[in-house]
Image (cartoon, rainbow, N blue to C red):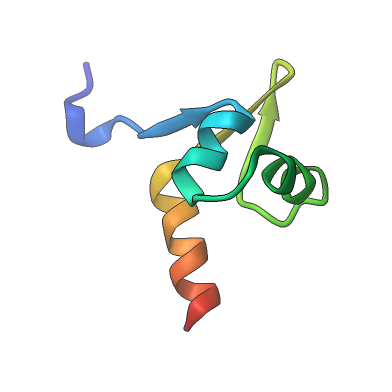
Length: 62
């Protein structure tokens, strides 16, 4: 049994990832395909952990 703090906040699909990072769908898919975002393809769909994605942008900006 896991409590809610153990669960990952996952973003499923390139379009949802694009919304989360404030980029266009086209730019986001380009970044995903080049491996420039912390995401993986699972069963043909892109998935990213929200916390890792946000940290990626904070660290890149610093």
